[in-house]
Image 1 (spheres, rainbow, N blue to C red):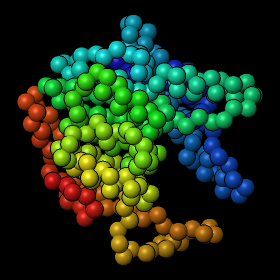
Image 2 (spheres, rainbow, N blue to C red; image 1 turned 60 degrees about the horizontal axis):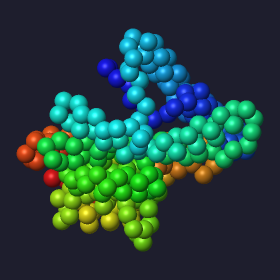
Image 3 (spheres, rainbow, N blue to C red; image 1 turned 90 degrees about the horizontal axis):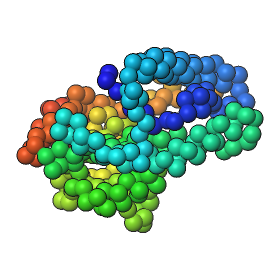
Image 4 (tube, rainbow, N blue to C red; image 1 turned 45 degrees about the vertical axis):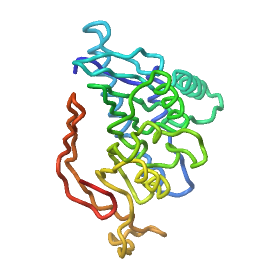
Length: 273
């Protein structure tokens, strides 16, 4: 690892944030919080401890990403930093710093810290946006228009196809405006559960791009299993795991615009090729 890129300016605020969780009045909450949150906190502590140790090796090891960072070129690939917005980073840090001092502040949505990167190679664009929200994508799309970047040949669908990343249909701009016309953009969708992708997002995505699913979240028809594990908790039911398609999907972009995709297992919900 030659550099460590991140979007969080204040590490103590981040560690405080990931240690917080919603509690509900039942006897399972403390156990669930410990099982879900503590491993994540411990992972981040180990990660930042390692980063802190290695950052002393040479200046510039740690790079904070935001929309204010200038584009960089690495091995012929030009990287444009479209997000997160520096103003959002400052708001995140201020809110959690205040909470650490015992002041009441609304918890910010951690997804506003998602990096939005546009990778330009051979006159073609690949867009990666993690879990960035709709407001962040409006700014990113405006930046792409301002700098006259090419339309994306490959898009990682933000936030597993969640509606909060795409915005409402009547809104003027969204990340789909970064895609090429006539469904020439390949869109890679990482679906996580039966709520993702949102049906309206999926419909708009199919109309604008060619989706490739790594795991779509649309529930298979005809499967109605209820509590197959026999959990003795009132209201327990199974959240059906969606079938995984294209588990080893990958892309290779050539300087002349050709793109090779690995073959995968076709699924019944998306248009895998």
